[in-house]
Amino acid sequence: MNVTKKLALGLSLGLGILSYAQVGDIRPVLTGAPFLRISPDARSGGLGDQGVATSADAFSQFWNASKYPFSRNTSSVAVNYTPYMSKLTNDVFLLYGAFNTALGEEGRSSLGVSLYYFNMGQVQLTELRAGLPYDNGTITPNEFSLDVSYALKLSDSYSMAVTGRFIRSDFGSFASESTLKPANSFAVDVSGFLQTPKHQSFGDYEGRVRAGWAVQNLGPRLDYTGDEESRSYLPTSMRVGAGYDLFLDDANKVGFTAEVSKLLVPGPDESGIVPNVGVISGIGKSFKNEKSLMFSGSLEYSYDNAFAIRTGYFHESPQQGGRQFATVGLGLNYQSFGLDLSYLINTSKVNSALDNTLRFGLTWNIGEESYNNDDY
Image (cartoon, rainbow, N blue to C red; front, side):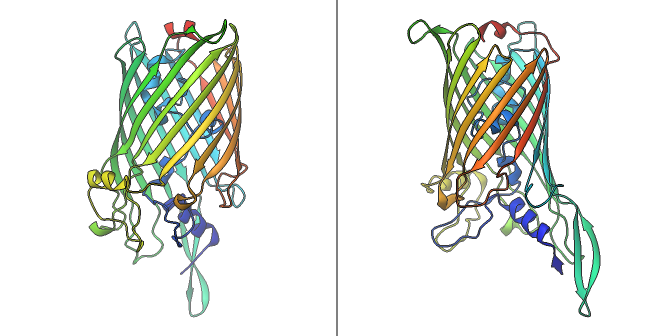
């Protein structure tokens, strides 16, 4: 069977965001459901693909659901569209939608629901019969996750959240004799977020500290083939970040944020073999990978919560995949509606599926202003 170029590229990116082979010292950690490692929203996309410690927004579910009790509005709906491999095709994309609402009169807890969908496009399959190409139908590989979260303020400055996630990853079947099948699993996130009240900062300015952490996608491995020896780890990860907001006056604010993240998945050994161990054992073995840390930093300027300019940078070790890129972004808000745009500029020698990609995000604040509004 001759699989089209589009299919080969799409599935190589689907089976591992890092699309080159393990050569020499290059040993990327590959996982199942790799779309869960792709930033789903334009605001974070403009901030160097980070969000565990940035200020709360409608897309907090993906990064750190414990930020929701610190939202400026009691309820919001958001949707984001991200073209994928836009240089090669126009029907591969990621779509993310989220809803959150405060619970109780004081809004100290919140409920969040989100859906993340990765469509790899419609792929035409052909095979050779008697030396001639034969149409073998089409497949539509796709992946999605459905999340539900609950967050609770444990104090005026600190909250925690737990998120449950159902994951389905379907790369399609290439032939009738193929053993490849859709894989289903579930996962849990646990996270925390700290945001202090405004306090006297540099000179006559006020400031505010932010910090967050999250352990994400903790759950059973994905089974694509029915072979227990070849099950794929979920992209279990840990994120830790901190930031600072400097209020220049009542309308102007500058935010700085830094984040460190790590895949809690064992990488291949010197012979290229990935250990076949349980999830918890795999987390322990992941710390032997000294180059698996990823770093990002960002800067965001906002005016009167109506206009924002963002930039950021993301760095990953060349041995782990080599994702290195700068980002820029723009945010506009009018009454209860918001629009976010971001653009990725690849700075690595490794090609990126999101290189020169423009992401779009829309937010609708359907609730009232929360008591947090005065703290912005």
